Length: 205
Image (cartoon, rainbow, N blue to C red; front, side):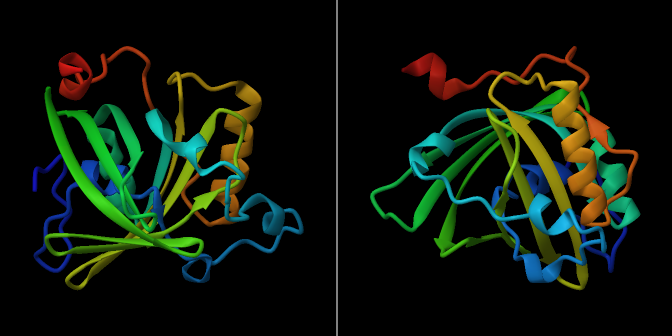
């Protein structure tokens, strides 16, 4: 497993980039402690698209937050990121590919996530992930993730769009959702300057 950031937790090392990009279908709402605002219940609803194919294809990371603090700080290592979701011959399995730019180099990977109802699970080396997609803005994909790596646990909330751009009103919506789930308010964002890592699959097709 490549590493964008070392996180000192129980002697284990968790890749921030990996955590960012496998989070897609990976969290149960029961693992979250939402704030008491009356609007929070609506803001953090899991999302099941009428057309599942609408979530397939390329997405670009724009906003994110982590918890606890070492994982939130780990996002600072990420300069740009994309993911690509695609179906498999098994309706309960989705393939996730990613390209992370961190520490002046590109890190690529691919993994399968198993979906059961509204929840999906994934395991990579010592990391176990569980999560969901949440309701979000049009043309956006909001992923949450709860993970365990040996004795270390943490979570992320990550916003993707098709273009890598996001409207100010949608940023405000993300901030409200992150606050409902008790994530740090000083969220991380894509700087729109660092180029995305090249997708070799696109160049060979």
